[in-house]
Length: 181
Picture 1 (spheres, rainbow, N blue to C red):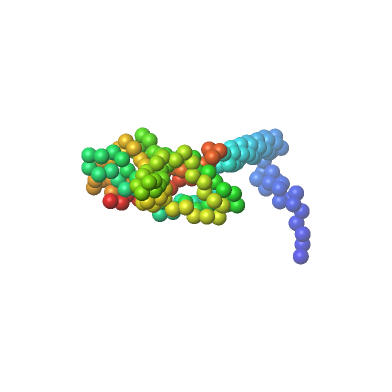
Picture 2 (picture 1 turned 90 degrees about the horizontal axis):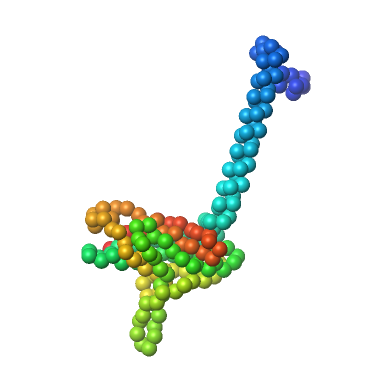
């Protein structure tokens, strides 16, 4: 088997019939384009990596499942979100806030038994144990959504409501809550 000299493969000047000055300009242009592409890729890659590291938890470490929103009754503006939160990481995560598109304010809440009475209280943070699943459900943790802007019932039942859970350090996880009645 005959080996081919790599320099021969790269010598396109002779194949294309280019003059030496044309070939030099073409090579310079090709180098400039390659350098520009590499520079842009390195900037894009580093900023994307930094943004992801600073603002989002890896979808494989913390995930949201079965997100649903109970929309306000007619004439009301308060809704509630239920979901399942799974922490597959090796560290406890501290949930510190929540945002729901279409509302002015959303809060983390918990039902508690106090003196034989069931009460709902706002909580500032919720620890999510490493390797554990935490359910936000009636009678336990849930997300209260205030001043909800809801369209006509027929329209609001057809859309999803983006929910962002915010963790200590500013990281976040997103999910779409399906409307339920």
